[in-house]
Image (cartoon, rainbow, N blue to C red; front, side, top):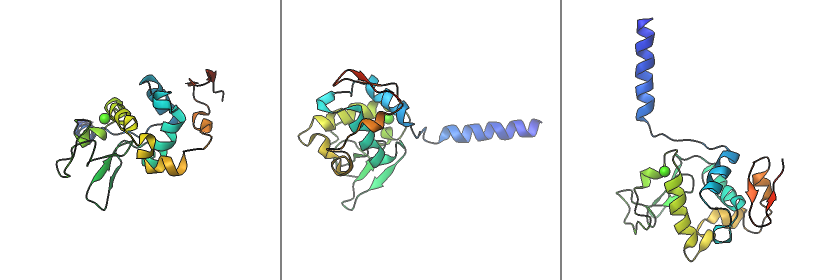
Length: 160
Ligand SMILES: [Ca+2]
């Protein structure tokens, strides 16, 4: 008994030492995005954000991708280390004034604040290639199917 208790404690410590990442459920993420004021922000809906985040990261906050130019992209919105955050390696504008590794944990409010800056810049949501390719011009209402989230644009509740 004593031995297994010790093993469990060691395992708990080891798990806590890892990045506190999370793969979000679609509706859970939808609610977080809505709460953070993204519904209608710069003319984009929660469906736009869900579609983009799905194709960028699969809603996985720990996702990192490396580009041929040496920069990397971090987290649920795949924010780039040459422009938006500092990874200590890539020369960066660090426009969000943040550490790229803060984009990998389950707490996504800072990611959302940075993404708001991205979508406020001149390329708007075209800053994300996957949004231009898979989401732009599509009916995105399916992304909110079954989620208890209201769509601002027509004030209509999306029913399951
Ligand atoms: Ca974060």
